[in-house]
Structure formats: structure tokens, C-alpha cells
Length: 226
Image (cartoon, rainbow, N blue to C red; front, side, top):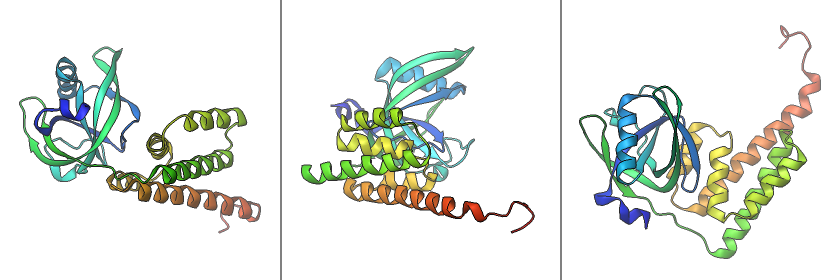
């Protein structure tokens, strides 16, 4: 239904640096630039939809299309608050993945024409198996980083009440993956492949933490000794 409300597959372009928004995930963003304030309030007056596209560094202009990652997320502004004079905090909920096709220049801010990227979901049984593997792997990681038992139980309960896609997208968004890895996962249409690749990334992190812990005792006390 949300897809049908966006006319002609055109949406305001909102750039974020080193942040990858996924569908079904909510993220707070700070808005201080005049062009983005105009974009936000124009969007709220119409449909509240914006196109959140990532860049690898701060300061990329919306005209620099070659520096904008072509896969982003159509999002909806769900709240706006003024955090300091003329600086606003917005919460954007990801709706669906989109591919940037062309830039449409405007007087204050730019729009983009996009193509919807459709997720290819596995069957229900496979979804449940993947969801269970995601939660179990996430719990192992949380234990390794020293999260409290109470917090782990709380997170597990929340995850179990989510559907498979929600668990996967929230896990990718929250896990401290490299920015390039998150971009790569965002571009993957096959959700089963996306889930398996993410789980392997987390298991690799756990392996490295175990390796560091195993050899920590033999680290020289003198920092000048290699």
C-alpha cells in the first residue's frame, strides 16, 4: 500500500553518511542543513516519504550522483522534534529497498526516480530455520561482548516476536559490521542468501574474539616488544 502512494516512483533524496537503513527498521537522524529541513517539512506536508541513500563520507552533495550508493531505502518520517534552535531530530522507518535510476534536480533539494527492489523470500519452514539460527548466533555474540543475561533474554524475546525479515534487518542494522558489508547485504535480493551471509559474518567475528582471548595471555607486557 505504501508503494502505491509514491507517485511515479519519485521521492526526495536524503543522504546519510555511513548509515544503511533497512526495511522495517527505524533510525533517528539529525537534520541541520537548510535544504534538508525544507525537504523534511515539504515531505511531511505531502506524504512523509523520503529516499534514504548512503554515502561513504560526510559532505557528499546530492548532485554528486557518482558518490551516492545506488541502493537505498524508501522511508517514512514517523516523528519530528526540535532538539536545539533550528536543529531537528527525525525518526525514519524503512519501507522497502530501492535502486536509484536518475537524479531530478530541484530548486532547494533534489529528488530521485527509483526502481523497487523486490525481496525473494524462502518458504515458511526455511524462514523459521534461518530466524532461529539468527537469534542463536546473535545470542552467542552478545555473550562474547559481555552483555547481561537479563538484556540477552529481553532481546531474544523481542526477536522471537518479530517475523524473519524483521529479525534479519534489525540484526544487520545493529551489528557492528563494516559499512561495505552492510551495503553489500542491502543489495542482495535473495533474503535467504542475505541471512546466510550475515550469519557467517557474525560467526567470523565470534571466531576472532575467541582467537584473541586464547592468545591474550602471551601478549608481551612491554608495548615495544612485537
